Amino acid sequence: MISESGNIKDSVQLPSMNIELDKQGILYVTYVEGSIIDIEEKKEERETILKITKGIKHPVLFSFENMVTITRAAKEYSVTPESEELFLAVALMAESFAQVVASNFYIKFYNPKIVSKVFKNDIKAVEWLLEVKNNKEENKSDSSKSTFSSL
Image (cartoon, rainbow, N blue to C red; front, side, top):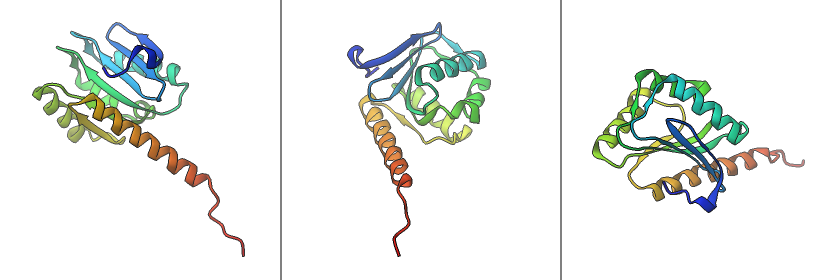
C-alpha cells in the first residue's frame, strides 16, 4: 500500500481488513490474506469508514492480498446506495492478471454508480483519486458562487 505511516491520520484493523485514512483524505482498504468478505464484513467496513470519516465522502483505494474471496452478496451490497454514499471515487488495485479481470468484470457487471477504475500501479491510482477529489472540491466551490449578475 502506498500510504506511509507518517502520512496516516487514522487507522483501524479489523479481522478481515485494514482501513486507513491519510492526511490527503484518501481511504485505503486492504483485505487481509485468506479473508472471506461477505455482507457482514462489508457492513463492518461501512461502519468503520463512517466513524473514521465522520460521514464525509472520500476517495478510496481497495487492495487485496492473496486468496481473498468476496461473495456475490458482498459485491451486490457494495453497489447499494447505502454502501456507495461513503465514496467520491473508487480505485481497485489489481496486481495480477486474475485480479485485473475480476475487477473489470465487477465494474462492468455490477455497474457501480460511483466513478470506479482499475489500476496496476498504486501511485497512479492515488494520483487519479486526488484528481477526482480536487475536481469535486472545485465544482463544489464553483456551485456555491452566485451566478446572478447585477442589472
